[in-house]
Amino acid sequence: MKRVFLPLFAIMLLAPIFASAQHTQFTSQLQHSENVVYGEDGGAPTIGGTIGIVIKGALSIVGVLFLAITVYGGFLWMTAGGNDAQVAKAKSLLARAIIGLTIITASYAITTFVIEALNAPASISA
Image 1 (cartoon, helix red, strand yellow):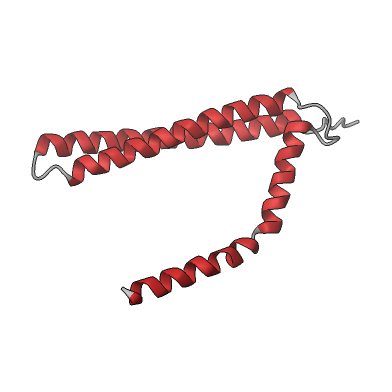
Image 2: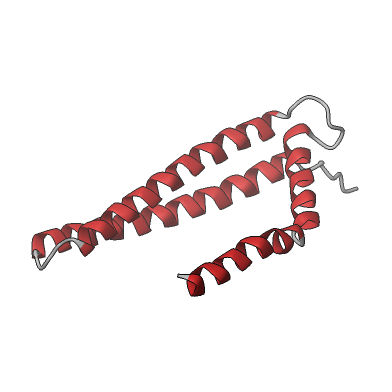
């Protein structure tokens, strides 16, 4: 028991140190997200930023559903006990979950691109 507990305890103590190394990068990403929502001047929220928050939130919920379906499919497969019908059902669930994940990822990328393009300052070329 001590052999397992000591390394886990050391990891728990050292984790905040490693996490704090990422603090500056996280702060700059947070500032960028805030600029996308509120605009560069920090005034009222922009329409594009608000729509982006709503869409990203919805995609996050769908991502959690993907995770639940994946865990359920894995559970079905592990508890099949040689039942071919249950294995086929589990494989079908996992395949659909992977297709859904691909669609969610593409949707998130497109949403991020469009929202940042809408919030980018217009450049006028002469």
